[in-house]
Amino acid sequence: MNKNGKRKLTILTAFILVSMILTACNTGEPAIDINAQKTGFAQTAEVQATMTAEAVPTQTPTPELTPTPTATATVEGNTEETPTATTETSTNPTATIGTGGTDSAAWRANDPPDNTVFSPGEAFTVTWTLENTGTSTWTTSYYISFFTGEQMGAEEKIYLPYSVPPGTNVQIAVNFVAPESEGTKQSDWVLKNASDETFYSFFIVVEVK
Image (spheres, rainbow, N blue to C red):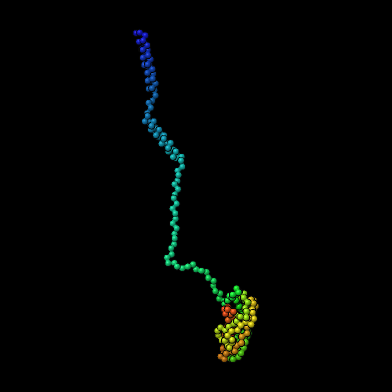
């Protein structure tokens, strides 16, 4: 065998030896299972996704507020108006004059006193004392007037003899004649201002026998 043939034999032998060595090394390593790797990757990804989902706090949905309907009451046929406050009228007779004052009076005395006895047809005089308890001044245009009961011959209207400021008294004398019939007789009178407005009443009671 010439030199070239020996060289080729040597190279071939070396190639075979290298191949055998490589084959021996490869048989010691386990074969890689591609499908198993894919399954492992998928399981790992699933576990990571689950852990991530548990780590993120769950958002609680905010409930929507439902508006409460407003109840509107409808009254059918209600034609009444709002009542207007009114001022009660005093039971005491008073009168307001143009100057802004108020007329008011109070009985203080009468002479003779009530239930004095007179004979039928006897003349007598009754003097009333009245106090001005208002805020106006009674002028001589104020007067007393017979109202009801037994007039006993007295005048229908008698004017005040002088002006009466608030807080002062006036004495008014009236002439009477006892009636012919016997019994208890009452004569009712009223006090009026210059506008003919009644603001006080008073009386006298006598016995005729």
